[in-house]
Amino acid sequence: MSATRLFLPLALSLMAACATQPKHNVTVEKQSECPVRLTTGQNLIVMLPSNPTTGYRWAIQDSAGGVLRALSPEVYSNPEDAGVVGSAGVSTWRFQAFAAGTGRLRLTSQQPWAPEVLPVETFDCAISVN
Image 1 (cartoon, helix red, strand yellow):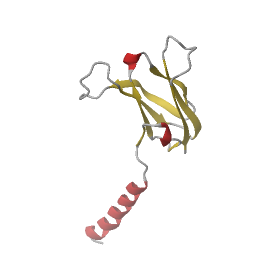
Image 2: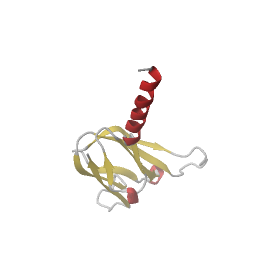
Image 3: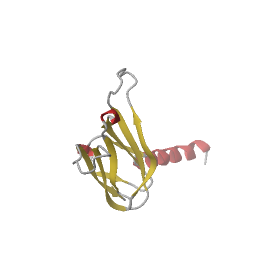
Image 4: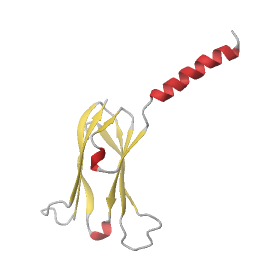
């Protein structure tokens, strides 16, 4: 059998395998994108609007610890073109699905020194890992 005849079936099977693999990163930027379904090994990136200069910070209340593991702490960034001190930006968290099951990823935005005051925003997302 010639190399060309072997190459074509191999190439087609590799393309089919790649087409059935889920994206490695899943990004969620708003509550309406939930619930989220992941496969073991996939990364979840959560990006929420944030402005720490107002005194309000996002805090993780429930990390879906049975199915997700944190890959990094919160990273805050603001757009380079904002040009205004105190302008809003984005807080980003990275997680990896490590076990099959379900959980909830819940974050609240509030002033850390006033825990008795209700949060101004809540992000609550059901997570399912296969």
